[in-house]
View 1 (spheres, rainbow, N blue to C red):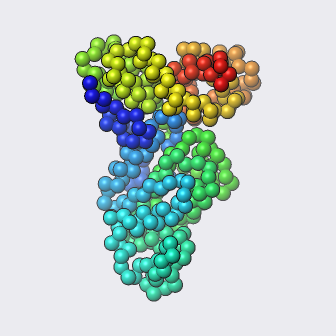
View 2 (view 1 turned 45 degrees about the horizontal axis):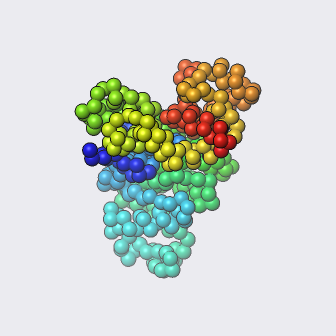
Length: 347
């Protein structure tokens, strides 16, 4: 059987289970006459679909004639990337080819309407933003996996200034909870606290079931249901399990061994290493089935109720834990088994 799934991180897969409500929310707000926010932050655990969601929104906005969209690398000079991307954009390049609009960039000196050449990239961007606004163009900047780096802190400060000056620029970025939390804790970047944050929930199990049922149309419904439950709504698990089942064509020990190994190698090792020891202590109290009551955690975790409450909130924001009516559940499939193995071998 031909494999219709894709395990490449960040790539829009062939079988993409769309988060239409989130995509619509972001695009609608950005395109509103008076947007409620010029910035959205998508956060979630590794493999939850942050990059795919960002790419989907970015691509949709790219199709709008009044929008210029650029993607930048958060580990390089961001303002330079934005300036060069705008200048090279087919949508607006013609606006900057006139002799009245020139600039100094990477050693090339030009003039703007006979005025002094611009040698500072921030000043250059401000003039570009004015030019874009004059022609009713809006700019979307997309940044994947933002961290609390020197480049990001510098850009975030400049972005805040650009917003204050009334430019039609928008920012969509993704990041792990700990990285976004660290970035927004900078005293000069408090505006990030007010930015809407989308913490990615698991995919809808009904959507996964229907997708698997369509692809594996010859399989029994009970098998499709078992596959669906094995994913627990984890986006990467949906693609991974689909790939493994295409090859194995049955749920057996070999498939489950491969499933556990690939989850470990590609996701869980990195996720586990990023979790602070205090949060791991709490996770280790959750039983093998991955579910328990709040009372169970309090009784089995040697911490104060206040400490437990803070740690649970962090784990929920990381996308590792969920609280539904007092029942706490690990969102990552078979993660409790992975934790117990790490604990046994003192990893």
